[in-house]
Length: 46
Length: 485
Ligand SMILES: Cc1cc2nc3c(=O)[nH]c(=O)nc-3n(C[C@H](O)[C@H](O)[C@H](O)COP(=O)(O)OP(=O)(O)OC[C@H]3O[C@@H](n4cnc5c(N)ncnc54)[C@H](O)[C@@H]3O)c2cc1C
Image 1 (cartoon, rainbow over the protein chains, first blue to last red):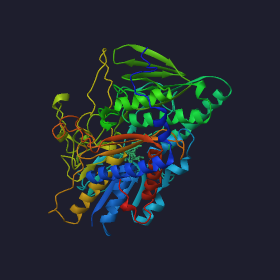
Image 2: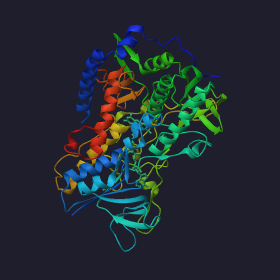
Image 3: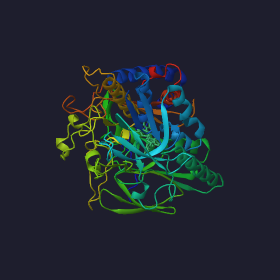
Image 4: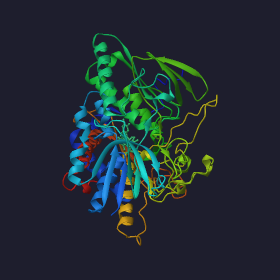
């Protein structure tokens, strides 16, 4: 059976990485950065 | 006076119609033909499918929008194209079968000067016996399907609340499917909702895909810089699954589905069975199966369409091995090579070949993702083609037509992993170009400056904001055209 249960080669996030994923001030900063990256990419495509 | 007829009011066709009308004043005519008078923002169907959004939030009634924009709307299904006219009438036309409440099934002819085929996919559930909402699995490809899927999912949640364990199988329902990203998003949303309903411990969540490995997404995977390394989307996707306890089966072709059981073959040629309580498996896509006839009534479908029903455009369709595939094979202007006034945009155009390297199982079954034409490129192509047609109509022939090759367009994919403003997250990924170009970017085929992946609440906020922006644009509200595709 080829169901892959836990592939231990996959990197797992540390508790702090997980915390920052939903930590609002950090995500607000990320929000701006991701938007800028996307705008750059959209500009290149338009 | 020119008449531009657009077949299909999905992401590509609706965008093309709005831009065609913006560029072409009266007396030029813009006509949209579509079986339903409703627009569906399909990417948000995944939220409908888990009961996190209502159908009303993902649809826009088209008639008021088209009345405001001075676009004619015909509720019907295009069935035939006569690019040279019929009999005594030597001007091109399409045959449309009414689907509205009045005169359902009756056929009418609509003449055109320019035709844009934006009919999207036929959801080919029939390719796998037992697949689809009329069989034993759910789908999220339309808002009606997604609504039904939500009912089945919430019923499974109720079972879990009563203490019964459930197996949820999510993914692709055939070896030649596309749109793996949608299945990926759906499985992450299901897993998130199970935690929200506090029944995660009662669920086994299994992802099944025709991708050779997780994170392929039908684009041969991608690489991005993270933490000082160049990592593959495979590691990124696997990490998300391991963290959430989602099991996965890759390189799988679902052969048939029976009540509560899926039968599938994997790339090693082995056959397997998996019992499930809830399954959402996407169907493979084909073209919608329009015919083409010449003036004498002879069938010329093969001049306009590939055998899979998608429309031939300015791509290089010569059969080539994977090693010979080039970015230049991909179409630029989406014009039919034989009939210069016919164009195909979005999923309706025939790609020259896949993007992921094709694979067959040890038994010879093709198990490999078909190339995706996601929302962003579909809409950009719709806009570019509409603007090029406007230039032709307005006699601006000295202008070079704009191009929109998927080997020169990027794509932003924000894969939702939970619909909640504070605890929800999404994997934001961008890539440039969509079709890898190893001549320009020899190492990874893509520009790593524009290819990245990240997960967090910010991604979810972006996805939610994009939902409202695209619904706003679909309604053609003030300054709609400023919103990029
Ligand atoms: C569940 C799901 C989630 C997705 N999520 C994302 C995402 O997050 N981001 C993204 O970029 N892409 C996403 N996609 C892909 C995206 O939805 C498609 O790329 C996009 O819808 C393609 O646009 P289209 O106009 O070519 O086809 P469609 O949107 O399918 O539109 C086709 C139109 O043609 C009409 N039509 C059909 N037959 C006829 C006929 N005979 N005559 C006239 N009209 C006809 C249909 O009714 C429809 O109006 C997702 C897809 C799915 C299924």
